Image 1 (cartoon, rainbow, N blue to C red):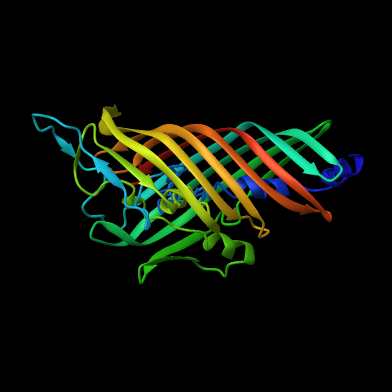
Image 2 (tube, one colour; image 1 turned 135 degrees about the vertical axis):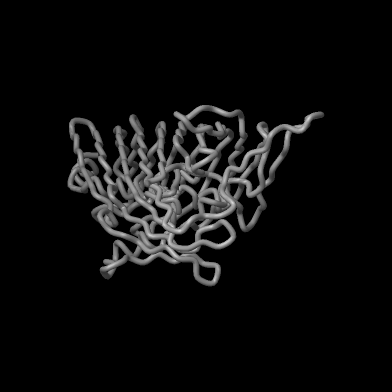
Length: 348
């Protein structure tokens, strides 16, 4: 047991941070708690830049979109009198439109368990991440962006681990912080490249993680209050900005609950319920990680600016996998509460 403790105490926090932090890539709106942890900046707005990049994307959390394996479903409320209908995404996008998005993700009191041949250690971990992105539409087609320019203004992660009497806190900047990325759809596939500089190996890994079109997160047609839609499959996970997927399964249920005032603007209040995601992925070291996430949340979607003025999600997350640390095989489990929030706004 003492050898295990000694080995772990000599191992920097990033080894564990890679496991938990890799899930929350900061995504610009393209990026992703899409799902919605997400991002105009995520995804995953929950995540992309949820990955993300969580995410991905004036940063917000998005979990909506279409899976290429299973189509999203939309159910409309029965009514004898037709209600007013509302668009949740624009029919066209103006060139030069710029969205700023911020994102925060916290695991305030996660349990960390390390199991080796000589015994096990149980500790605590606190993870706090924040991001800020600015995304400009360069070109679009049929109401969807085809080329964007995204600047990662801030991508910070603070991790504190407590193992017995050993406490360690680490601050880490994302490898893309301060850089601008060109995001372009070519032959039906999204590509990402740094502008003005050659990407390092670490930056190239981040750039290869999935980008999801935020404008696919909501129904294309105008919908009534009470309309629900369900998203299932890998696209849901991409909205979180989680990359290097081996498998993905999950779904989330969205409902346009009612209209709300957001300052001088009208917003659609959209509930997120029954969010469940199970995925296997490769971490930055090439090791397989099992990630489970569940929760519920709410989105305030501007009906004039078509941005998510506020997104919040609460739930739980678990990450399990095996790492080779100082020559020893260590099984790592992280389980704890998860809190995500995001804000988007149009810039003049």
